[in-house]
Length: 592
Image 1 (cartoon, rainbow, N blue to C red):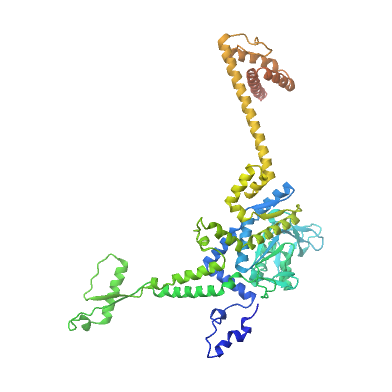
Image 2: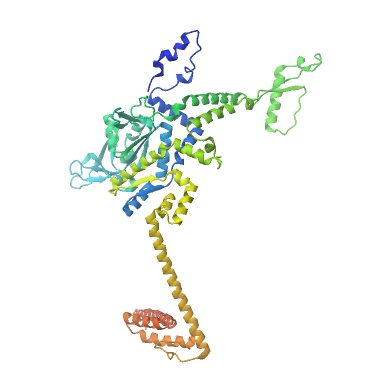
Protein backbone atom coordinates (compact mmCIF):
# COMPACT_ATOMS: atom_id res chain seq x y z
CA UNK A 1 0.00 0.00 0.00
CA UNK A 2 1.16 3.55 -0.71
CA UNK A 3 2.60 5.41 2.28
CA UNK A 4 0.83 8.77 2.81
CA UNK A 5 3.73 9.94 4.95
CA UNK A 6 6.09 9.63 1.98
CA UNK A 7 4.81 12.95 0.58
CA UNK A 8 5.82 15.59 3.17
CA UNK A 9 5.08 18.41 0.77
CA UNK A 10 1.43 17.38 0.81
CA UNK A 11 0.96 16.66 4.52
CA UNK A 12 3.53 18.79 6.33
CA UNK A 13 4.39 21.56 3.89
CA UNK A 14 1.26 23.55 4.67
CA UNK A 15 2.19 23.84 8.34
CA UNK A 16 5.61 25.32 7.52
CA UNK A 17 4.08 28.43 6.04
CA UNK A 18 2.45 30.97 8.32
CA UNK A 19 0.35 32.29 5.45
CA UNK A 20 -1.64 29.05 5.15
CA UNK A 21 -4.05 27.19 7.35
CA UNK A 22 -3.03 23.75 8.74
CA UNK A 23 -3.53 20.83 6.38
CA UNK A 24 -7.04 19.43 7.08
CA UNK A 25 -6.05 15.99 5.81
CA UNK A 26 -3.39 15.57 8.45
CA UNK A 27 -5.83 14.86 11.26
CA UNK A 28 -5.93 12.60 14.29
CA UNK A 29 -7.36 9.47 12.54
CA UNK A 30 -4.48 9.59 10.06
CA UNK A 31 -2.06 8.95 12.92
CA UNK A 32 -3.71 5.54 13.55
CA UNK A 33 -4.41 4.54 9.94
CA UNK A 34 -2.74 1.12 9.28
CA UNK A 35 -0.24 1.02 6.43
CA UNK A 36 0.21 -2.77 6.08
CA UNK A 37 -2.17 -5.65 5.45
CA UNK A 38 -1.74 -7.27 8.86
CA UNK A 39 -2.62 -3.98 10.57
CA UNK A 40 -5.68 -3.56 8.36
CA UNK A 41 -6.91 -7.04 9.21
CA UNK A 42 -6.35 -6.33 12.91
CA UNK A 43 -8.50 -3.19 12.69
CA UNK A 44 -11.12 -5.17 10.72
CA UNK A 45 -11.35 -7.58 13.67
CA UNK A 46 -11.60 -4.63 16.06
CA UNK A 47 -14.40 -2.90 14.13
CA UNK A 48 -16.36 -6.15 13.81
CA UNK A 49 -16.20 -7.03 17.51
CA UNK A 50 -16.78 -3.52 18.88
CA UNK A 51 -19.76 -2.47 16.72
CA UNK A 52 -22.78 -4.72 16.83
CA UNK A 53 -24.70 -2.76 14.20
CA UNK A 54 -21.80 -3.17 11.77
CA UNK A 55 -21.71 -6.95 12.20
CA UNK A 56 -25.51 -7.13 11.81
CA UNK A 57 -25.36 -5.05 8.63
CA UNK A 58 -22.70 -7.32 7.12
CA UNK A 59 -24.70 -10.44 8.06
CA UNK A 60 -27.83 -9.06 6.42
CA UNK A 61 -25.94 -8.26 3.23
CA UNK A 62 -24.34 -11.71 3.18
CA UNK A 63 -27.60 -13.60 3.77
CA UNK A 64 -29.75 -11.45 1.47
CA UNK A 65 -28.32 -13.05 -1.67
CA UNK A 66 -28.60 -16.69 -0.49
CA UNK A 67 -31.60 -18.16 -2.32
CA UNK A 68 -32.21 -21.73 -3.59
CA UNK A 69 -29.90 -24.09 -5.42
CA UNK A 70 -30.03 -24.95 -9.11
CA UNK A 71 -28.17 -28.20 -9.88
CA UNK A 72 -27.68 -29.13 -13.54
CA UNK A 73 -26.48 -32.70 -14.03
CA UNK A 74 -27.38 -35.24 -16.69
CA UNK A 75 -27.18 -38.15 -14.24
CA UNK A 76 -30.22 -38.02 -11.95
CA UNK A 77 -28.65 -40.29 -9.32
CA UNK A 78 -25.53 -38.12 -9.22
CA UNK A 79 -27.72 -35.02 -8.91
CA UNK A 80 -29.44 -36.46 -5.84
CA UNK A 81 -26.02 -37.34 -4.41
CA UNK A 82 -24.86 -33.75 -4.82
CA UNK A 83 -28.01 -32.52 -3.07
CA UNK A 84 -27.49 -34.91 -0.15
CA UNK A 85 -23.83 -33.97 0.37
CA UNK A 86 -24.49 -30.23 0.10
CA UNK A 87 -27.21 -30.61 2.71
CA UNK A 88 -24.84 -32.51 5.00
CA UNK A 89 -22.19 -29.79 4.84
CA UNK A 90 -24.90 -27.13 5.50
CA UNK A 91 -24.28 -25.19 2.31
CA UNK A 92 -26.40 -22.19 3.38
CA UNK A 93 -24.41 -21.80 6.57
CA UNK A 94 -21.13 -22.12 4.67
CA UNK A 95 -22.16 -19.42 2.19
CA UNK A 96 -23.25 -17.15 5.05
CA UNK A 97 -19.94 -17.53 6.89
CA UNK A 98 -17.95 -17.06 3.70
CA UNK A 99 -19.94 -13.94 2.80
CA UNK A 100 -19.47 -12.43 6.27
CA UNK A 101 -15.70 -13.01 6.17
CA UNK A 102 -15.54 -11.59 2.65
CA UNK A 103 -17.34 -8.40 3.66
CA UNK A 104 -15.53 -7.98 6.99
CA UNK A 105 -11.96 -8.75 5.85
CA UNK A 106 -12.16 -8.38 2.08
CA UNK A 107 -10.86 -11.96 1.82
CA UNK A 108 -12.35 -15.41 2.39
CA UNK A 109 -10.07 -18.45 2.49
CA UNK A 110 -12.00 -21.72 2.31
CA UNK A 111 -10.90 -25.34 1.94
CA UNK A 112 -12.98 -28.48 1.48
CA UNK A 113 -11.30 -31.50 3.04
CA UNK A 114 -12.29 -35.12 2.34
CA UNK A 115 -11.35 -36.45 5.77
CA UNK A 116 -8.98 -39.31 6.43
CA UNK A 117 -8.48 -42.51 8.39
CA UNK A 118 -5.27 -42.82 10.41
CA UNK A 119 -3.35 -46.08 10.75
CA UNK A 120 -0.29 -47.08 12.76
CA UNK A 121 2.07 -49.28 10.72
CA UNK A 122 4.64 -51.58 12.30
CA UNK A 123 8.08 -50.86 10.81
CA UNK A 124 9.05 -54.56 10.93
CA UNK A 125 6.06 -56.65 9.83
CA UNK A 126 4.18 -53.71 8.16
CA UNK A 127 0.93 -54.60 9.96
CA UNK A 128 -1.47 -51.64 10.04
CA UNK A 129 -3.86 -50.84 12.89
CA UNK A 130 -6.75 -48.36 12.78
CA UNK A 131 -5.91 -45.77 15.43
CA UNK A 132 -9.60 -45.06 16.08
CA UNK A 133 -10.00 -48.58 17.49
CA UNK A 134 -7.18 -48.37 20.05
CA UNK A 135 -6.24 -46.12 22.98
CA UNK A 136 -3.15 -47.81 24.42
CA UNK A 137 -0.65 -46.01 22.19
CA UNK A 138 1.77 -43.29 23.30
CA UNK A 139 2.16 -39.92 21.54
CA UNK A 140 5.21 -37.72 22.06
CA UNK A 141 6.87 -35.08 19.87
CA UNK A 142 4.74 -36.04 16.89
CA UNK A 143 5.70 -39.73 17.08
CA UNK A 144 3.54 -42.74 17.91
CA UNK A 145 4.64 -45.65 20.12
CA UNK A 146 2.68 -48.88 20.11
CA UNK A 147 2.98 -52.67 20.59
CA UNK A 148 2.39 -54.63 17.38
CA UNK A 149 -0.58 -57.02 17.56
CA UNK A 150 1.02 -59.53 15.19
CA UNK A 151 1.82 -62.58 17.38
CA UNK A 152 4.86 -63.35 15.22
CA UNK A 153 6.24 -59.81 15.57
CA UNK A 154 5.16 -58.14 18.84
CA UNK A 155 7.39 -55.15 18.10
CA UNK A 156 7.13 -52.48 20.79
CA UNK A 157 8.30 -49.02 19.91
CA UNK A 158 7.80 -46.29 17.35
CA UNK A 159 5.22 -46.95 14.60
CA UNK A 160 4.77 -45.09 11.34
CA UNK A 161 1.74 -42.83 10.92
CA UNK A 162 -0.20 -43.42 7.68
CA UNK A 163 -3.20 -41.28 6.66
CA UNK A 164 -5.52 -42.57 3.93
CA UNK A 165 -8.09 -40.29 2.32
CA UNK A 166 -11.67 -41.28 3.03
CA UNK A 167 -14.44 -41.70 0.47
CA UNK A 168 -17.14 -41.32 3.10
CA UNK A 169 -19.21 -38.18 2.28
CA UNK A 170 -20.01 -37.79 5.99
CA UNK A 171 -16.36 -36.90 6.65
CA UNK A 172 -16.26 -33.98 4.18
CA UNK A 173 -15.52 -30.81 6.14
CA UNK A 174 -15.48 -27.16 5.09
CA UNK A 175 -12.91 -25.00 6.89
CA UNK A 176 -12.90 -21.18 6.93
CA UNK A 177 -9.37 -19.97 7.64
CA UNK A 178 -8.60 -16.77 9.62
CA UNK A 179 -7.47 -14.05 7.22
CA UNK A 180 -4.55 -13.00 9.42
CA UNK A 181 -3.11 -16.53 9.51
CA UNK A 182 -3.04 -17.06 5.73
CA UNK A 183 0.08 -15.88 3.93
CA UNK A 184 0.03 -15.24 0.18
CA UNK A 185 2.90 -15.32 -2.30
CA UNK A 186 1.64 -13.54 -5.42
CA UNK A 187 3.14 -12.57 -8.78
CA UNK A 188 1.68 -9.21 -9.81
CA UNK A 189 2.05 -9.51 -13.59
CA UNK A 190 0.50 -12.97 -13.99
CA UNK A 191 -1.85 -13.11 -11.00
CA UNK A 192 -0.58 -16.53 -9.93
CA UNK A 193 -0.41 -17.10 -6.19
CA UNK A 194 0.53 -19.67 -3.56
CA UNK A 195 -1.17 -19.87 -0.18
CA UNK A 196 0.26 -20.95 3.17
CA UNK A 197 -1.06 -21.32 6.69
CA UNK A 198 1.15 -19.67 9.27
CA UNK A 199 0.41 -21.98 12.22
CA UNK A 200 -0.23 -19.94 15.40
CA UNK A 201 1.64 -20.85 18.59
CA UNK A 202 -1.57 -21.45 20.54
CA UNK A 203 -2.57 -24.15 18.05
CA UNK A 204 0.90 -25.73 18.14
CA UNK A 205 0.85 -26.03 21.92
CA UNK A 206 -2.61 -27.54 21.81
CA UNK A 207 -2.01 -30.32 19.27
CA UNK A 208 1.50 -31.27 20.41
CA UNK A 209 0.69 -31.82 24.07
CA UNK A 210 1.99 -35.18 25.31
CA UNK A 211 -0.40 -38.18 25.14
CA UNK A 212 -3.38 -36.10 24.04
CA UNK A 213 -5.27 -38.93 22.33
CA UNK A 214 -7.88 -36.69 20.68
CA UNK A 215 -5.54 -34.43 18.69
CA UNK A 216 -3.19 -37.34 18.02
CA UNK A 217 -6.02 -39.07 16.14
CA UNK A 218 -7.62 -36.21 14.21
CA UNK A 219 -4.81 -33.75 13.40
CA UNK A 220 -3.49 -34.31 9.83
CA UNK A 221 0.02 -35.68 9.57
CA UNK A 222 1.10 -32.91 7.20
CA UNK A 223 0.43 -30.37 9.95
CA UNK A 224 2.60 -32.28 12.42
CA UNK A 225 5.37 -32.51 9.82
CA UNK A 226 5.25 -28.74 9.24
CA UNK A 227 5.20 -27.99 12.97
CA UNK A 228 8.32 -30.00 13.74
CA UNK A 229 10.06 -28.84 10.53
CA UNK A 230 9.11 -25.25 11.45
CA UNK A 231 7.43 -24.61 8.12
CA UNK A 232 4.14 -23.17 7.00
CA UNK A 233 1.44 -25.49 5.64
CA UNK A 234 0.98 -25.15 1.87
CA UNK A 235 -2.65 -25.32 0.78
CA UNK A 236 -3.61 -27.75 -1.96
CA UNK A 237 -5.03 -25.68 -4.82
CA UNK A 238 -7.44 -28.49 -5.76
CA UNK A 239 -9.50 -28.13 -2.59
CA UNK A 240 -8.73 -24.51 -1.65
CA UNK A 241 -10.38 -21.31 -2.87
CA UNK A 242 -9.61 -17.64 -2.21
CA UNK A 243 -12.42 -15.12 -2.64
CA UNK A 244 -11.47 -11.46 -2.48
CA UNK A 245 -13.18 -8.11 -2.93
CA UNK A 246 -11.89 -5.80 -5.67
CA UNK A 247 -9.27 -3.26 -4.56
CA UNK A 248 -8.01 -0.07 -6.24
CA UNK A 249 -5.28 -0.91 -8.70
CA UNK A 250 -2.89 1.70 -7.28
CA UNK A 251 -2.57 -0.21 -4.00
CA UNK A 252 -0.06 -3.06 -3.82
CA UNK A 253 -1.68 -5.72 -1.66
CA UNK A 254 0.39 -8.82 -2.62
CA UNK A 255 -2.55 -10.88 -3.89
CA UNK A 256 -4.93 -9.94 -1.09
CA UNK A 257 -7.73 -7.42 -0.81
CA UNK A 258 -8.10 -4.42 1.49
CA UNK A 259 -10.93 -4.84 4.04
CA UNK A 260 -13.86 -2.57 3.09
CA UNK A 261 -13.94 -1.11 6.61
CA UNK A 262 -10.57 0.61 6.01
CA UNK A 263 -12.29 2.94 3.54
CA UNK A 264 -14.52 3.97 6.48
CA UNK A 265 -11.68 4.27 9.00
CA UNK A 266 -12.36 7.91 9.88
CA UNK A 267 -16.09 7.24 10.27
CA UNK A 268 -15.39 4.45 12.76
CA UNK A 269 -12.83 6.64 14.51
CA UNK A 270 -15.28 9.51 15.01
CA UNK A 271 -18.02 7.11 16.11
CA UNK A 272 -15.68 5.67 18.73
CA UNK A 273 -14.82 9.17 19.99
CA UNK A 274 -18.53 9.82 20.53
CA UNK A 275 -18.96 6.46 22.24
CA UNK A 276 -16.04 7.24 24.54
CA UNK A 277 -17.61 10.61 25.40
CA UNK A 278 -20.93 8.87 25.97
CA UNK A 279 -19.25 6.42 28.34
CA UNK A 280 -17.91 9.29 30.46
CA UNK A 281 -21.39 10.84 30.58
CA UNK A 282 -22.90 7.55 31.75
CA UNK A 283 -20.39 7.31 34.58
CA UNK A 284 -20.48 10.93 35.71
CA UNK A 285 -23.76 12.59 34.73
CA UNK A 286 -26.56 10.00 34.61
CA UNK A 287 -26.94 9.44 38.38
CA UNK A 288 -27.07 12.74 40.35
CA UNK A 289 -24.64 13.45 43.18
CA UNK A 290 -26.74 13.77 46.36
CA UNK A 291 -25.60 15.97 49.28
CA UNK A 292 -27.04 16.40 52.79
CA UNK A 293 -25.82 19.46 54.70
CA UNK A 294 -26.68 21.59 57.75
CA UNK A 295 -29.43 24.08 57.14
CA UNK A 296 -28.70 27.76 57.78
CA UNK A 297 -31.67 29.51 59.48
CA UNK A 298 -32.17 33.22 59.02
CA UNK A 299 -31.38 33.89 62.67
CA UNK A 300 -27.68 33.27 62.89
CA UNK A 301 -27.60 33.56 66.73
CA UNK A 302 -30.01 30.64 67.22
CA UNK A 303 -28.31 28.46 64.64
CA UNK A 304 -27.71 25.07 66.42
CA UNK A 305 -24.93 24.23 63.99
CA UNK A 306 -22.74 26.82 65.72
CA UNK A 307 -22.87 24.98 69.05
CA UNK A 308 -22.61 21.28 68.06
CA UNK A 309 -19.92 18.82 67.06
CA UNK A 310 -19.79 18.25 63.27
CA UNK A 311 -18.64 14.66 63.69
CA UNK A 312 -21.63 13.76 65.83
CA UNK A 313 -23.92 15.45 63.30
CA UNK A 314 -22.43 13.46 60.41
CA UNK A 315 -22.70 10.17 62.32
CA UNK A 316 -26.35 10.86 63.04
CA UNK A 317 -27.06 11.59 59.38
CA UNK A 318 -25.23 8.39 58.26
CA UNK A 319 -27.28 6.35 60.72
CA UNK A 320 -30.50 7.81 59.38
CA UNK A 321 -29.45 6.97 55.80
CA UNK A 322 -28.66 3.37 56.80
CA UNK A 323 -32.09 2.99 58.41
CA UNK A 324 -33.73 4.35 55.26
CA UNK A 325 -31.89 1.80 53.09
CA UNK A 326 -33.08 -1.04 55.33
CA UNK A 327 -36.67 0.19 55.39
CA UNK A 328 -37.49 2.82 52.71
CA UNK A 329 -41.01 3.15 54.14
CA UNK A 330 -39.90 4.10 57.66
CA UNK A 331 -40.34 7.54 59.29
CA UNK A 332 -37.16 9.31 60.39
CA UNK A 333 -36.59 12.04 62.97
CA UNK A 334 -33.70 14.45 63.31
CA UNK A 335 -33.36 17.20 65.96
CA UNK A 336 -31.85 19.79 63.63
CA UNK A 337 -32.88 21.17 60.23
CA UNK A 338 -31.27 19.60 57.15
CA UNK A 339 -30.59 20.75 53.61
CA UNK A 340 -30.73 18.27 50.67
CA UNK A 341 -29.26 18.92 47.20
CA UNK A 342 -28.83 16.97 43.92
CA UNK A 343 -25.82 17.87 41.82
CA UNK A 344 -25.54 16.76 38.18
CA UNK A 345 -27.98 14.25 36.66
CA UNK A 346 -28.32 16.04 33.34
CA UNK A 347 -26.70 13.18 31.39
CA UNK A 348 -29.66 12.54 29.09
CA UNK A 349 -29.30 16.10 27.80
CA UNK A 350 -25.58 15.64 27.13
CA UNK A 351 -25.62 12.26 25.35
CA UNK A 352 -24.69 12.85 21.65
CA UNK A 353 -27.44 10.60 20.27
CA UNK A 354 -27.98 12.52 17.05
CA UNK A 355 -24.28 12.68 16.26
CA UNK A 356 -23.83 8.95 16.90
CA UNK A 357 -26.81 8.13 14.67
CA UNK A 358 -25.33 10.37 12.00
CA UNK A 359 -22.02 8.50 11.92
CA UNK A 360 -23.80 5.14 11.95
CA UNK A 361 -25.88 6.29 9.01
CA UNK A 362 -22.71 7.34 7.17
CA UNK A 363 -21.17 3.90 7.73
CA UNK A 364 -24.32 2.14 6.47
CA UNK A 365 -24.37 4.42 3.44
CA UNK A 366 -20.74 3.55 2.76
CA UNK A 367 -21.76 -0.11 2.83
CA UNK A 368 -24.41 0.61 0.16
CA UNK A 369 -27.17 -0.68 2.42
CA UNK A 370 -30.41 1.36 2.63
CA UNK A 371 -31.18 2.65 6.10
CA UNK A 372 -34.75 1.36 5.78
CA UNK A 373 -33.53 -2.10 4.84
CA UNK A 374 -31.27 -2.20 7.90
CA UNK A 375 -34.10 -1.01 10.17
CA UNK A 376 -36.55 -3.49 8.58
CA UNK A 377 -39.07 -0.75 7.71
CA UNK A 378 -38.66 -0.61 3.93
CA UNK A 379 -41.89 0.69 2.35
CA UNK A 380 -43.53 -1.16 -0.53
CA UNK A 381 -43.72 1.94 -2.71
CA UNK A 382 -39.92 2.30 -2.65
CA UNK A 383 -38.92 -1.34 -2.35
CA UNK A 384 -38.32 -1.80 -6.07
CA UNK A 385 -35.81 1.00 -6.77
CA UNK A 386 -34.15 0.68 -3.34
CA UNK A 387 -33.58 -3.06 -3.63
CA UNK A 388 -32.46 -2.77 -7.25
CA UNK A 389 -29.85 -0.21 -6.26
CA UNK A 390 -28.78 -2.36 -3.32
CA UNK A 391 -28.50 -5.52 -5.46
CA UNK A 392 -26.51 -3.75 -8.14
CA UNK A 393 -24.14 -2.34 -5.53
CA UNK A 394 -23.33 -5.86 -4.31
CA UNK A 395 -23.63 -7.70 -7.62
CA UNK A 396 -20.25 -9.31 -7.07
CA UNK A 397 -21.45 -11.15 -3.93
CA UNK A 398 -23.75 -13.72 -5.68
CA UNK A 399 -20.93 -14.18 -8.19
CA UNK A 400 -18.59 -15.19 -5.36
CA UNK A 401 -21.27 -17.50 -3.94
CA UNK A 402 -21.55 -19.25 -7.30
CA UNK A 403 -17.77 -19.61 -7.41
CA UNK A 404 -17.83 -21.21 -3.96
CA UNK A 405 -20.63 -23.58 -4.99
CA UNK A 406 -18.66 -24.49 -8.12
CA UNK A 407 -15.68 -25.23 -5.85
CA UNK A 408 -17.88 -27.49 -3.73
CA UNK A 409 -19.11 -29.30 -6.85
CA UNK A 410 -15.60 -29.84 -8.24
CA UNK A 411 -14.21 -31.05 -4.91
CA UNK A 412 -17.14 -33.38 -4.14
CA UNK A 413 -17.20 -34.75 -7.68
CA UNK A 414 -13.46 -35.54 -7.70
CA UNK A 415 -13.60 -37.10 -4.22
CA UNK A 416 -16.50 -39.45 -4.98
CA UNK A 417 -16.01 -39.91 -8.72
CA UNK A 418 -19.33 -38.27 -9.64
CA UNK A 419 -20.17 -36.79 -13.05
CA UNK A 420 -19.66 -33.07 -13.46
CA UNK A 421 -22.46 -30.83 -12.21
CA UNK A 422 -23.14 -27.12 -12.49
CA UNK A 423 -24.38 -25.70 -9.19
CA UNK A 424 -25.49 -22.12 -8.72
CA UNK A 425 -28.02 -19.93 -6.89
CA UNK A 426 -31.28 -18.65 -8.29
CA UNK A 427 -30.76 -14.92 -8.99
CA UNK A 428 -32.27 -12.98 -6.12
CA UNK A 429 -34.16 -10.66 -8.50
CA UNK A 430 -35.87 -13.62 -10.15
CA UNK A 431 -36.58 -15.24 -6.81
CA UNK A 432 -38.32 -12.15 -5.38
CA UNK A 433 -39.78 -10.43 -8.48
CA UNK A 434 -43.48 -11.21 -8.10
CA UNK A 435 -44.40 -9.23 -11.22
CA UNK A 436 -42.06 -11.31 -13.36
CA UNK A 437 -43.41 -14.54 -11.87
CA UNK A 438 -46.95 -13.42 -12.72
CA UNK A 439 -45.99 -12.67 -16.34
CA UNK A 440 -44.17 -15.99 -16.72
CA UNK A 441 -47.20 -17.80 -15.26
CA UNK A 442 -49.50 -16.19 -17.82
CA UNK A 443 -47.16 -17.08 -20.68
CA UNK A 444 -47.04 -20.70 -19.50
CA UNK A 445 -50.85 -20.86 -19.25
CA UNK A 446 -51.14 -19.71 -22.88
CA UNK A 447 -48.50 -22.28 -23.93
CA UNK A 448 -46.21 -19.48 -25.16
CA UNK A 449 -43.14 -20.63 -23.25
CA UNK A 450 -41.95 -23.85 -21.65
CA UNK A 451 -43.35 -24.83 -18.23
CA UNK A 452 -39.82 -25.41 -17.00
CA UNK A 453 -39.29 -21.62 -16.95
CA UNK A 454 -41.98 -21.15 -14.30
CA UNK A 455 -40.83 -24.14 -12.26
CA UNK A 456 -37.26 -22.89 -12.36
CA UNK A 457 -38.27 -19.58 -10.76
CA UNK A 458 -39.45 -21.48 -7.69
CA UNK A 459 -36.46 -23.82 -7.55
CA UNK A 460 -38.21 -26.94 -8.95
CA UNK A 461 -36.61 -29.33 -11.44
CA UNK A 462 -38.82 -29.94 -14.47
CA UNK A 463 -37.89 -33.62 -15.03
CA UNK A 464 -38.22 -34.43 -11.35
CA UNK A 465 -41.68 -32.86 -11.19
CA UNK A 466 -42.82 -34.76 -14.30
CA UNK A 467 -41.78 -38.07 -12.73
CA UNK A 468 -43.57 -37.23 -9.48
CA UNK A 469 -46.71 -36.21 -11.40
CA UNK A 470 -46.75 -39.47 -13.38
CA UNK A 471 -46.38 -41.48 -10.17
CA UNK A 472 -49.21 -39.53 -8.55
CA UNK A 473 -51.51 -40.20 -11.54
CA UNK A 474 -50.69 -43.90 -11.39
CA UNK A 475 -51.41 -44.08 -7.65
CA UNK A 476 -54.67 -42.20 -8.14
CA UNK A 477 -55.85 -44.63 -10.84
CA UNK A 478 -55.09 -47.64 -8.64
CA UNK A 479 -57.00 -46.15 -5.72
CA UNK A 480 -59.98 -45.33 -7.93
CA UNK A 481 -60.02 -48.88 -9.34
CA UNK A 482 -59.96 -50.40 -5.86
CA UNK A 483 -62.82 -48.17 -4.77
CA UNK A 484 -64.88 -49.13 -7.82
CA UNK A 485 -64.39 -52.86 -7.16
CA UNK A 486 -65.43 -52.36 -3.56
CA UNK A 487 -68.60 -50.56 -4.58
CA UNK A 488 -69.48 -53.29 -7.14
CA UNK A 489 -69.18 -55.98 -4.47
CA UNK A 490 -71.40 -54.03 -2.08
CA UNK A 491 -74.01 -53.37 -4.78
CA UNK A 492 -74.05 -57.04 -5.87
CA UNK A 493 -74.53 -58.19 -2.27
CA UNK A 494 -77.42 -55.80 -1.72
CA UNK A 495 -79.10 -56.87 -4.97
CA UNK A 496 -78.89 -60.58 -4.05
CA UNK A 497 -80.38 -59.97 -0.62
CA UNK A 498 -83.22 -57.90 -2.11
CA UNK A 499 -84.03 -60.61 -4.69
CA UNK A 500 -84.09 -63.29 -2.01
CA UNK A 501 -86.53 -61.31 0.09
CA UNK A 502 -88.85 -60.81 -2.91
CA UNK A 503 -89.09 -64.34 -4.27
CA UNK A 504 -87.19 -67.17 -2.50
CA UNK A 505 -85.45 -70.01 -4.30
CA UNK A 506 -83.11 -72.87 -3.84
CA UNK A 507 -79.38 -72.38 -3.68
CA UNK A 508 -77.58 -73.06 -6.86
CA UNK A 509 -80.73 -72.86 -8.97
CA UNK A 510 -80.34 -69.34 -10.33
CA UNK A 511 -79.34 -69.30 -14.01
CA UNK A 512 -75.67 -70.22 -13.81
CA UNK A 513 -73.33 -72.67 -12.18
CA UNK A 514 -72.72 -70.49 -9.08
CA UNK A 515 -75.60 -68.02 -9.26
CA UNK A 516 -77.43 -67.05 -6.03
CA UNK A 517 -80.06 -64.85 -7.63
CA UNK A 518 -83.28 -64.99 -5.62
CA UNK A 519 -81.60 -66.62 -2.61
CA UNK A 520 -81.71 -65.48 0.97
CA UNK A 521 -78.53 -64.81 2.99
CA UNK A 522 -79.06 -68.16 4.78
CA UNK A 523 -79.22 -69.95 1.42
CA UNK A 524 -76.07 -68.18 0.24
CA UNK A 525 -74.25 -69.27 3.41
CA UNK A 526 -75.44 -72.86 3.03
CA UNK A 527 -74.29 -72.99 -0.58
CA UNK A 528 -70.93 -71.53 0.49
CA UNK A 529 -70.58 -74.29 3.12
CA UNK A 530 -71.18 -76.96 0.52
CA UNK A 531 -68.72 -75.49 -1.96
CA UNK A 532 -66.08 -74.98 0.76
CA UNK A 533 -66.34 -78.64 1.79
CA UNK A 534 -65.77 -79.60 -1.84
CA UNK A 535 -62.74 -77.28 -2.21
CA UNK A 536 -61.11 -78.08 1.14
CA UNK A 537 -59.49 -81.39 0.09
CA UNK A 538 -58.09 -79.85 -3.12
CA UNK A 539 -54.50 -78.60 -3.48
CA UNK A 540 -53.69 -74.90 -3.42
CA UNK A 541 -53.54 -74.39 -7.20
CA UNK A 542 -56.84 -76.15 -7.86
CA UNK A 543 -58.56 -74.33 -5.01
CA UNK A 544 -57.41 -70.90 -6.32
CA UNK A 545 -58.62 -71.76 -9.84
CA UNK A 546 -62.12 -72.67 -8.55
CA UNK A 547 -62.24 -69.52 -6.39
CA UNK A 548 -61.40 -67.34 -9.39
CA UNK A 549 -64.17 -69.05 -11.37
CA UNK A 550 -66.67 -68.36 -8.57
CA UNK A 551 -65.45 -64.76 -8.31
CA UNK A 552 -66.08 -64.19 -12.02
CA UNK A 553 -69.69 -65.44 -11.72
CA UNK A 554 -70.76 -64.24 -8.29
CA UNK A 555 -68.69 -61.93 -6.12
CA UNK A 556 -70.98 -62.34 -3.12
CA UNK A 557 -70.72 -66.11 -3.12
CA UNK A 558 -66.95 -65.81 -3.63
CA UNK A 559 -66.57 -63.70 -0.49
CA UNK A 560 -68.66 -66.13 1.57
CA UNK A 561 -66.79 -69.21 0.28
CA UNK A 562 -63.42 -67.61 0.96
CA UNK A 563 -64.43 -66.68 4.51
CA UNK A 564 -65.74 -70.19 5.13
CA UNK A 565 -62.50 -71.77 3.86
CA UNK A 566 -60.43 -69.53 6.14
CA UNK A 567 -62.60 -70.51 9.13
CA UNK A 568 -62.31 -74.22 8.29
CA UNK A 569 -58.54 -73.91 7.95
CA UNK A 570 -58.29 -72.13 11.30
CA UNK A 571 -60.47 -74.78 13.01
CA UNK A 572 -58.33 -77.55 11.52
CA UNK A 573 -55.16 -75.95 12.85
CA UNK A 574 -56.63 -75.53 16.32
CA UNK A 575 -57.84 -79.14 16.34
CA UNK A 576 -54.40 -80.38 15.29
CA UNK A 577 -52.69 -78.41 18.07
CA UNK A 578 -55.15 -79.79 20.65
CA UNK A 579 -54.57 -83.39 19.53
CA UNK A 580 -50.81 -82.90 19.72
CA UNK A 581 -51.11 -81.67 23.30
CA UNK A 582 -53.25 -84.63 24.29
CA UNK A 583 -50.78 -87.10 22.76
CA UNK A 584 -47.94 -85.42 24.59
CA UNK A 585 -49.74 -85.72 27.92
CA UNK A 586 -50.47 -89.43 27.32
CA UNK A 587 -46.80 -90.11 26.61
CA UNK A 588 -45.63 -88.63 29.93
CA UNK A 589 -44.72 -90.99 32.85
CA UNK A 590 -47.64 -91.78 35.13
CA UNK A 591 -50.28 -91.15 32.46
CA UNK A 592 -53.26 -93.51 32.69
